[in-house]
Image (cartoon, rainbow over all chains, first blue to last red; front, side, top):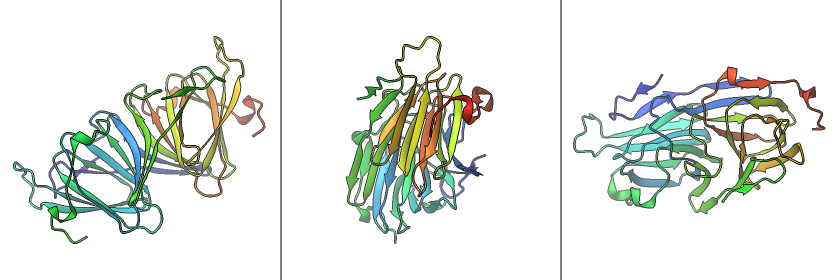
Length: 148
Length: 148
């Protein structure tokens, strides 16, 4: 079952099954009763080039559930919520096929991500509300001090 | 919007957007108001090796929505439904990143698929009910005559 991340309150890291068989493999992403599931709005694929960084983003109301089935991606989450009980406000999460987990990012957190593999870095994002440009806030990289 | 496949009644082929930008790309899969969307149960990744075939499968009640974001996969769908109005009972669908479409397979159809690329053939399946072994019927390859 899901493991509650103890660095940022209500960020969830859930180890996922990879089932190998002789004709191919099966990789879980999310089911409608899994930890972090909050309803279905959209699922899409996004890729991030090697050493490119997309930061910072905040969703006002969307919960994201993210897996990385190809390549390696570093996610950085910053908790600037006023009512946060979090001890450590910035935390890093490395996702890849070798560390195949689902990262649940609740709304109101700031996050960014960076491609770590020279091959394709692919992430799959399942969100509870379809993409809406008005729902997302984007800030420049220097909005939060972090050495990528 | 979705194009109704005219070979097998209620199979839907929906062309999907691929949006390129300088840091990476975005590939649509499905939103909760898209053609073929029938509720959310599970999303998972499956891979199929080159020239391997998984056939035949039938879902009693599940609707599947499938994309192929890596490699190339041939799907073959056979319509043996008694009340079918379909003129042509077996049809082929080639999915790949170059033919990036969503294939909606309603329940009660038989289907199978084959890996066509020597690289990884990856499919993402969004279904309206979580995987349940009792919901799926599997038959041997010779159950339906088809030259793969």
